Length: 135
Ligand SMILES: [Zn+2]
Image 1 (cartoon, protein in one colour):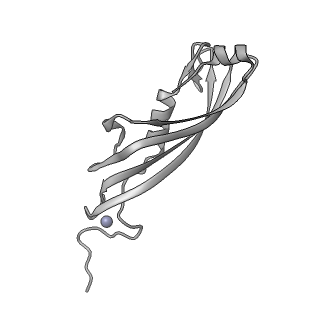
Image 2 (cartoon, helix red, strand yellow):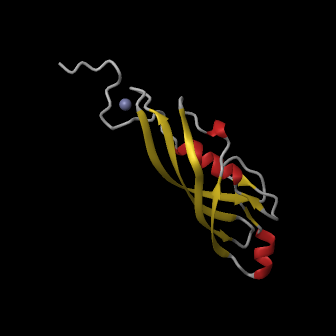
């Protein structure tokens, strides 16, 4: 999952699309008793600017499954999340840095997976937990 900026510049391909699947580390799922099911699909596009800044829009799609955070029944949720990123060849505090030659998207993809995760996974929106009184 790399964008070879220098090479693409040489070829005059200043814009393009990418798509790949990614197996994230297990510890990337922060919800207790849950995990990311299978692979994360990553899709996006890039634009390379004259000053070598690169704008990347990427969407991560994945499924979290495990036990409901409230009642422990099995639960599953599809997540789709899009982030807009600017890669800059000079370090600053606001953007992702790259060496001016190629961009490795791993950090941005991992960040998108972390940011897009809910705090809890619920079996249904109205789940009231184990101690619900039905009477
Ligand atoms: Zn539940």
